[in-house]
Image (tube, rainbow, N blue to C red; front, side):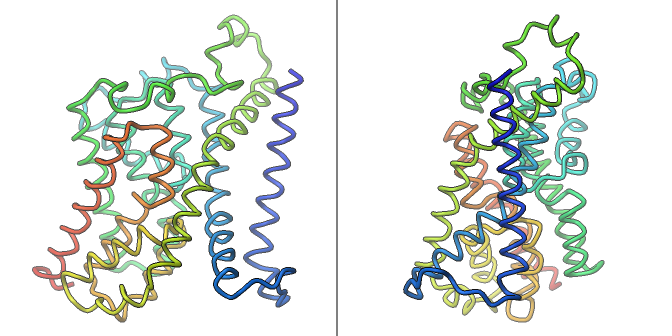
Length: 345
């Protein structure tokens, strides 16, 4: 119990730090015109600013996903999962793609959630559809896309194509029902100090709600710290690639119906911005890039970026991660090319 209290205290402090950091980064510093305490060279200062921006942008959503994962671990049982998930693979996979409407997490928060759902017996294909679809098919991202583009073709295309790709790739994984061949064995093992599997069922039944809630936050803290290392490394890699690859090189080829699609898919991967704000970045490219490339950017970016690849490696086998990168990329490029060359949107 003492360890649980320490983890809970650490978790609360972490929440406060993230909220304060987000508030300072987004509001106070630009308004007050504050300068850094250490005068770094411009390139180094830009590097630090980009890294902090990526991390602070993603951390609250990883935090949200960790909280959801903790609640799932304590309050959801395999029997609950068996009752909720349909037996029909098509309906179940479609449901997985739409689970983001219930668990509104982005590409950073979805990984700890799906790991806990797998521990509760979630079918392989449903989990794959969830991690690909949830970053876009959730109320927060739908609202931000609407704010940027209104009820335009781009708005509906983003939602529709994301659902189709997530469900399609999820169905591909129905050919491999053995979860252990898709995820790392450690994924199904208890997170240290956090699993209800280590606690006798009789003890769980007599626990009070407050005790179970406290334990769920302890698990959430474990999840955050466990997945946070991948977020930090992914943010560092994304920052490095942004510093080394001039964005003007990608933007300069934006008018071609073919190269524009490839360029914006590459840019989405390199930028690694959260799906809650990427619609406003895409809005910046509307005047210089083709419609197909904009849609490809909005569909592919939330599914796979540098941060999510690193986090996927903490859950899935490398071969699975390769599929999770290649299949969405090819699907997004194909959609962008069809729109540019045939539909003329």
